[in-house]
Image (cartoon, rainbow, N blue to C red; front, side, top):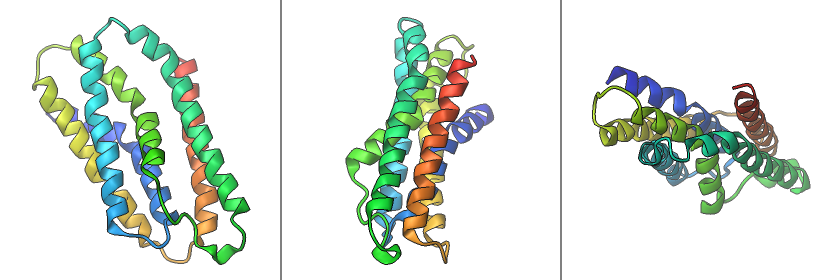
Length: 187
């Protein structure tokens, strides 16, 4: 079970980075924002390995081949849009992201959980251990806690202008996309 928790922690790092970025940029911040981060990221980190397990080796080669490109495209688009919105947003005191849409959170959750699909495929070929559903639930719960905690902690960081945080967040998202793309290309 320890190995499943460690897998959950490693899979949740991209979700953590996104949650921290959004936690800083959201003004005014509401606890519900952090809860939504945890729910979206946790749900997808639960569902993607489960889907990977079910798909097994049937389409894993295809998903593994295009996954990095899909992740990069989603993260680069969202990150670029964040940067553009922050730059076009006007004055420094204008407040940062006022609303984080469910559509944006959904796209971020999908983009940051595609690697979990490959983990699920590996579950199909692993020796028996804790049940697959239990393993996926542990991964999802771990991600929920880390994403929720990241957004909550980041919201309390003083002295960062929301516009600056939104630009930095966009750069971080593009950077995560590039990292995932390079990892996929170098495999």
